Length: 414
Image (cartoon, rainbow, N blue to C red):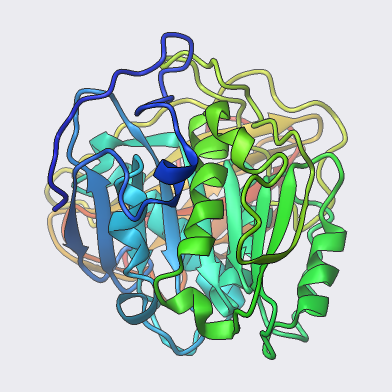
């Protein structure tokens, strides 16, 4: 735990602007103004557990959050845990996840990052400290590639940070992303080379804020150990895009300290979507579907997504229950989510069913396996989320065509 508990009031026009005015020295410090603590996260909920770090202050409301995933064959505990208390002390909740398998690929790491955020905001012991509308993802190497894929799947994320993201052959194309993206790479990285990162950077759309910093003399593993240059760039970026705190723009637009940076490009002035003056009770714009298909060309939905309280335990005798909510909608389509909750006994496998409305179809499902028969949609658990302890939950999402309705899905087990 960090010493010191000095309270810092939020700015009147931005409830997320917290702490004293930043200076070059404060941004480069190894600890920020907030005292922190940490807890171990058990395995389950779609990933293999990990660690959560967070400010102890409860007087300022909820905090923005970042989920971090390690690279291929690596453990967060060995390679990225140094970042947890550092970032938390600047006013973020940090979830470091361990993957279900150390050989999971980028796609699986993307799935587990999003599962980690869902756990963090819905069922974790610290969910009351997290703002579910200010979430981000970050990862190294294959985890960095997973981070960029997660951003494509969940456009409601506030930002994504790829640390030497991916390996040659992934051919990551970010042309449809809607998430502000920061790429950090090493000048001497022979695994994820500067030219490879340049290729990813070139696909980022002009209408989405993004930046790329190449760290002088760094290799592929430089991000797996304490790296002050990385943090001097990362903290302002997260402050801008998670907290809408434009006091930090001065450090990146233009780059105020180029020490240790061999290359830097950005879409300055780096204006965070939604602006820095959102009141605490206002829900930011609703999500749009994960753009594995081209994103809709019509304006985003005007109705904010409903908030859903943490699922309650189904009544005794019920194997499991399923509840539906619409995440977002647009002309000709929508994004839905179903929460599956075990009853009074553990569940080993689950199946949900519901009736599609007139003109509805389903084009994609994640965290589950889809089959349809006529107007009946059936989704069964994925390999990693079928086992639920009594009263615990998991979620799956899907893209639908047509207009959204309010179905009442059933749940059976096995």
